[in-house]
Amino acid sequence: MTGADKRDSAPGEMMLSIALLYWSLHDRLDCSGPDLSKRERLVLMRLPTPRRMGDLARTMQLLPSTLTVLADGLEKRGLVERQRDPDDRRAWLLELTKEGHAARCELNEVVEIALREATGLPEDDLEVFGALLLRIRDHIMADGLPKGLPF
Amino acid sequence: MTGADKRDSAPGEMMLSIALLYWSLHDRLDCSGPDLSKRERLVLMRLPTPRRMGDLARTMQLLPSTLTVLADGLEKRGLVERQRDPDDRRAWLLELTKEGHAARCELNEVVEIALREATGLPEDDLEVFGALLLRIRDHIMADGLPKGLPF
DNA sequence: TTGTATGTTTCATTTATTGAAATATATCCG
DNA sequence: CGGATATATTTCAATAAATGAAACATACAA
Image (cartoon, rainbow over all chains, first blue to last red; front, side):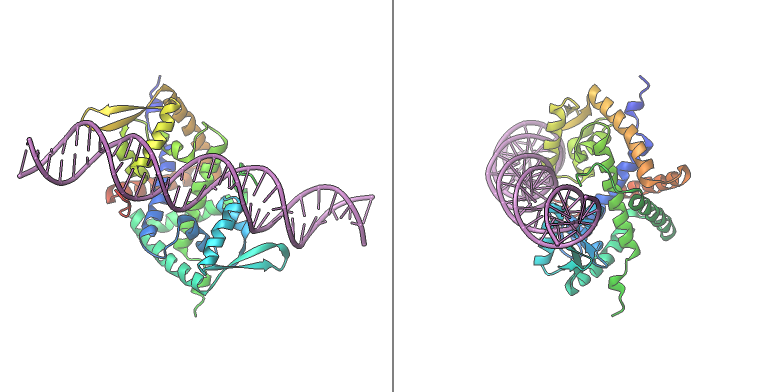
């Protein structure tokens, strides 16, 4: 018995820190900005321009049927609209309405504050952190999204 | 109209990247390592040494009643045990069993691989990223966990 | 003591997620 | 062209998870 099982592992600590940051950001956003669920928030943020629902579902690692329900709710509240994809009439494009764009703008402002306050990092470190995150995002998007999902 | 609402904002991109990484890590862990739900995984990872349930719930930003149910499940599967806190007999300490420690060890190994693969970062950048994450974690833990929760 | 605060549990309600089956359209191939 | 098969989304019923109020036990303070 080396006791390694009783110690924190660096990767473990990283994962827990990511979780802590992720949920802290959501909690801050729950208290300010537009009144949206966590999933709804992420949908809105991912819609600067229209996107296919299946595409969105894959990126968000949700089942298509889960995204359908999310989109229904956002549509009912007038934040998004479904439009047929002209390139493939089976698919729907999800597009923000005027109110949707306004909500997204407001959200982005609150996210900026939340990030600063939650991380507590000075400007330059936050930039380093952000640059690494973008590289990670690009890698995840390129490398293929997680395999295990039932698509 | 400046079109700012149609552009991605840097903080928005960061938040989305954090979400993408968070869920990608979980998805990878769903496919390998011990068979645990996402929440159960995080509980196990946070238990290198025994901790109070309320303390855990606060850190994980869960309601006490949610953690009770999680702990019930883990206890039923023989991974954790409740022990009265000698310092406050109202409180329970959650402690890993032998099997719990084994599962946590296995988990930590898989987390390391998942982090490498998901981020795609070379060793040195991953270290920079990790160091920033630990600073963020320390800030969040010190600054007070998110306020809006019903504790 | 007594009163109030804290740590946890219970349980009923609400909310979210899953997955199988259905619909519509696309694509491939003979 | 026509038929088989694949893909994008929806529907809906079943399951799982989170929420919050009430209860219980213990702590702490006056």
